[in-house]
Length: 99
Image 1 (tube, helix red, strand yellow):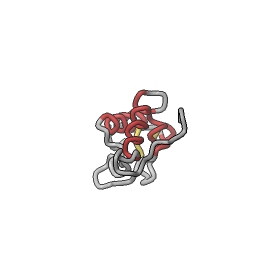
Image 2 (cartoon, rainbow, N blue to C red):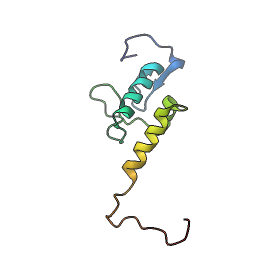
Image 3 (cartoon, helix red, strand yellow):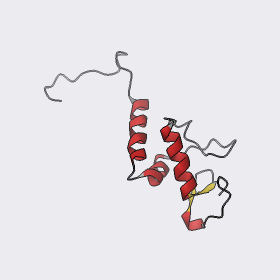
Image 4 (cartoon, rainbow, N blue to C red):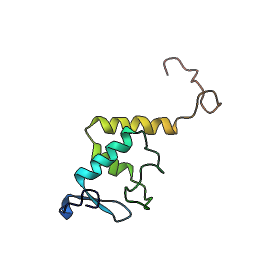
């Protein structure tokens, strides 16, 4: 693993689309730290190796954080990124009752 410099079994490693591999522990910690800093946009949640800007996929984030509070936090932060700002005319209130 290039982060902890320990040898990780191939079957226990996480391989990103850029072909860089990390042990599951380091990858989970890295993803959790990015989520904790609200750095979850496509251009922010990238391979941790210097100079590599390969995006970490939502499926990879889910695999590293599923069943934890970090997964829920990730989803909340991502929703805020895609949610239009109120008052800019992009969102309208539904006129149907209890919608």
